[in-house]
Length: 117
Length: 112
Image (cartoon, rainbow over all chains, first blue to last red; front, side, top):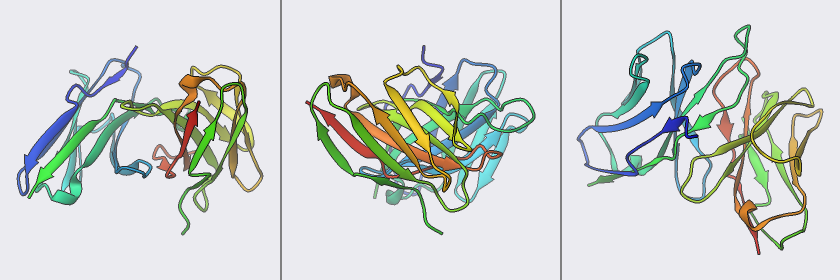
């Protein structure tokens, strides 16, 4: 049962253009969402996150949008740079009662982003 | 500030053997989570340790076990290795009250 899905295995974008990575989830209990970037031979690097009480969070070139009714989130990278080429994972979690994170992250399968110069 | 470190980087074992993987958490982090990432898949949650006790477990059999030490470092032990255990094992540290987890570079385990 894949609770978090990234339906696009790969995405190719020209340098300077926008990259849009998509993620869908099925578990309505998820209330915190994260994006990670992973280079070969390295662990995932945290990029940006969003709580379910928000619909947008921005950090520099990265913006995450959350549509709770559609159970969909997306990561926008503007402008895209060749150094952004990596595998991008979305992840979701359920906060334990009292606001403390239970800590289990459920990941999608990843999308390989290639940014061409 | 030291990030999350893992050892060894690579490991080759044969079916039926036992393996221990090690993780040092990021400075100040008191919670450690372990994940298994098979080729072409996203990381799968194995378990989490907080204050030296298991604080949640994913869908992994009991032959996957762990420890957390007073300095918050952690070990993942896998007994009776199977071919399907071949994967990248990732350790992530965090503060208990935070959602963001910070990952180490992983240990690539190959079971022959």
